[in-house]
Amino acid sequence: MLNITVLCVGKLKEAYWRDAVAEYTKRLGAFCKFQVTELEEDRLPDKPSDAQIAVALSAEGKKMAAKIPAGAAVVALCIEGKPCSSTELAERLEEFALGGVSHVVFLIGSSHGLAPELKSRANWRLSMSPMTFPHQLARVMLLEQIYRAMNIRSGGKYHK
Image (cartoon, rainbow, N blue to C red; front, side, top):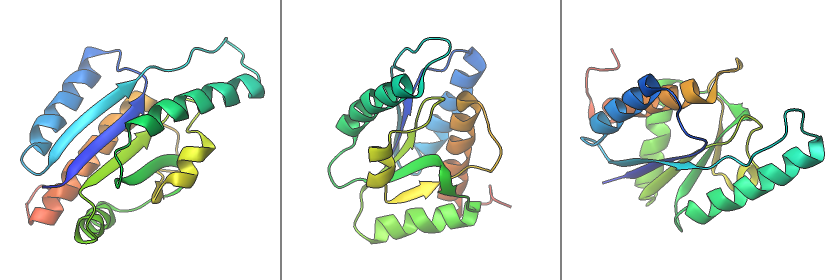
């Protein structure tokens, strides 16, 4: 059974986002071993300098890297990534599984993004859209798409 982790910086503040994540986590349990791991965001001043942002991204990147299991496929959600369809996401997850990968880790950084080292380490850079979304919404959207992809892989009707 495939293990999927969404590793993200920051906590969900509103109950409705937490409820949505809990619902998709429950649904995904039928297809894979799934978990969301939240890491604390490094605090920055209201108007951080580029240097302060770089230091925070580096610190967050080290915390994230420490949580990635050895041998896991890493998918970095980032602006430089390429968008894909739900079917393409399902195909990519299938390719990982057929290639002997047992654990896929999706990375969602802070509002300032992901550390460059994490992007370099990623097996795949994925963009949700050319539009910008709040990180809390992006997390729920990612879970929905992972659930949809797992349904596609199993021949389910959710995708239709």
